[in-house]
Length: 110
Length: 122
Image (cartoon, rainbow over all chains, first blue to last red; front, top):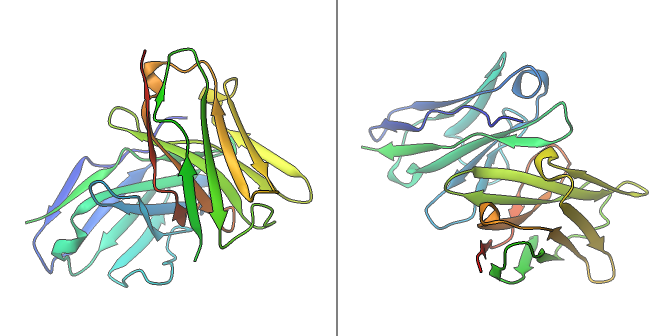
C-alpha cells in the first residue's frame, strides 16, 4: 500500500488560513469516510485532530476542519497561530483492511 | 483518561526478535468497540501502521502486508496489555514504535504510548 500524498510544506502568516491536501486512491481516501488527521510537534507524540473526514474530537480547536472530495482529503487551519507550527499527517482506511499514512506536511507560521 | 505505557528494549541485534509491550490504564484490552494498534515512525519511512488486535466475541488481528510473515500482535487480558513481536529484524526496522488505541475501530488513534526508539544494530 503506497503512502498517501501530502505536500512537504505549507506556510502562512498569523491569522491566515491554510489548507493541507492528502491524496490517495479510490481504494483508500476515495472509498471510505475514515480519514484522520494528526498534529505532531517535534519530539512529541502525534495528536488526533480530525477523525472520520470532518469530525473534531473533544478539546480540539474549531479552527481545525476537515473535508474530502473524491480521492483527496483536506485539513484547513483557520486563524493560523504560532502554536500551529508542527507536522501534520493524514491517514486512511484501505480496501485491504489496513491503515495508511501520508508522508507528512510541515506547517510553518511566518 | 486512557494511558498507554510502553516497555521493551531499545536495542535489538539483526536477525533477532523485537518485543514491545503496552500496558493499558483507563480502558480494557477486551473493549469490544476498540482496537489496539502498533505504529512506527522513522525519518526515511515516515509513519507506518504495523497492525492491530481487537476483541469482537473472539480475538482478531490485522497486519500490514509488508510485515505479514514477521509480525505478531497479541493481547494479555490478565494484565490488560498488548504486545508486538517482530522477527528477523534488520536495520530497516530501526524506528520509534508507538502503541495506540482506536476507540471505535475507524482509524481514530486517540491515545498513544510514549514511543520507544528501537535501534537494530550489532
